[in-house]
Amino acid sequence: MKRIGLAASAALLLLPLTACGGSAVAGDGSTVTVTVGYQSKTINTVTAGTLLRSLGYFEKDLDALHDGHTYKVVWQDYATGAPITAQMTAGKIDIGSMGDFPLLINAARGKQLGRPTHLVSVTGYNLRGGLNTIVTAPSSKLASLTDLKGKKVSTSIGSAADGTLVRALQRAGIDPNQGIEKLNQQPAVGASALTAGSADALSQFVAWPGLLTYQGRAKALYDGAQLNLPTFHGVTAREDFAKRSPAVLEAFLKAQAQATGYLNTHPVAAAEKVANATGLPAEVVYLYNGAHGISTFAPAVKPQLVSALKQDVSVLKAAKLTGDVDVDSFVDDQYVKKALGASYAEQLAAAPPAAASEAWPKGAEETRAFKSPAGLLRYVAAHRDGIRAAYVPDATTGTLWFADKAVWVADGDQLLPFVAPATAQAYTSAHGGARVITYADALERAA
Image 1: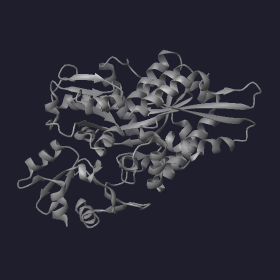
Image 2: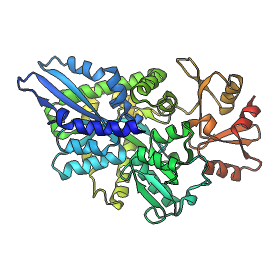
Image 3: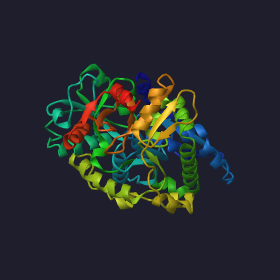
Image 4: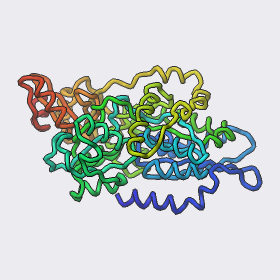
């Protein structure tokens, strides 16, 4: 956890050296520096950040421009979207990636400061909102959102995770401003607070909930997909940069599309690359970015995501983080349309892959998919010492989760997994005879 804070601090210290003026032509007029802000630990942005950087596609596509310039790409890593916005509006970052709520703040700050920015593509998304999760300590007695009343909940105000917390509490009949004690903390700080017991729950974005759960430091309380509202991360670019260097921006978006293709074609290898670059466990990266992961990656700006962005404005206004945001003028997909060409329409129409259970055998370069959670359980039961990770989709939301961390329900011959206890309880209440069982019991029943 300390490495995250140190990385962010180091990046800030380097700004005067590496981010002076963002995209700039050197004195001899031949070298152009392009500065990209990204979030290595926010693995929903890897096709515009961590994975893209490791693959080198952007640099290759810039070299292919053959426009008389030599290009230098400076990659700056941050823990959240806020400092990226600050550097963009100061003219020191040209292209950045961040979540939907930070994107709106990016739009508002850019307009306010006379440095307008635009959403130019999408990285990863989940149409139901499964990228955000509320977790508690493993030993916590909290079992539902209503149990959070009067409790200390850590989140990052202005983030998509905070938006999930606010909306979830409102649906549960709890005033998000007075019904809980909200702690505004960076993800790493909030994770430490949860572990230390100074926070009762943590609402955070990818990959923090999965990471803490995998490490045995948290368990899920609320699956963001229960909101059934899209959440996503995207790429934003300064308007002046886009107008001055459209070919450079298009090269970035082509490279992003290439990285997306690599991730979709080689999900295990991509997870390993991101893990090597970030220090995150590959098993956690794959939970979100795998073949049937929580996140779907495609650069196209889907209408459902733009509509969700408009709905997000009211949450930020209520928190007094922005005023009105003209989402339609903020969204500018002309560059990604040109970069993707004929495939853009196909991507707009494409649906996310169907949910499926997966097992990742030790030493394997591919995972095995199963038609049902019971099929996965049978395989795991027969290969107990040979499984690196096993994943199952929530029976009601489709959100992928670790099989050994899921809440299991036996309903006759069916074995059904759930991310959170409340959704499992809702199912058993509606289905006579169904009951919650342990993971070990589920394995025995399947075997």
